[in-house]
Length: 151
Image (cartoon, rainbow, N blue to C red):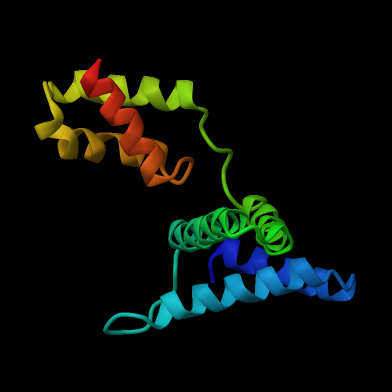
């Protein structure tokens, strides 16, 4: 079992003892998503820490998008619930890169790949994504690459 998955299970037990409902529900949901990822595909497998981190990142993105949707629908109480769950998930994610650091990595990748226009955006993205590894969402990465290619 991966260290991160073990940590999630341990934290779930602690949250249940402390009767922290938000944390308990969020960790249960996350462990269910991890289990689903383990049995998806053609055969069951044990996820590595990187794979578990991808699942947590995906769940965090869902919470962020749901909070925005609830804000747009003028449902602040539901948006707050999603943000509370997001806060729990962010405790397991690496620190997010700020825009300046993301722009620097994108500019470096453009230089490294020799890309000259938007047609080579895919090549640049392939170079940037491993360097970022869970520290920024795909949309933010793509925006930084676009800025670097335009500039």
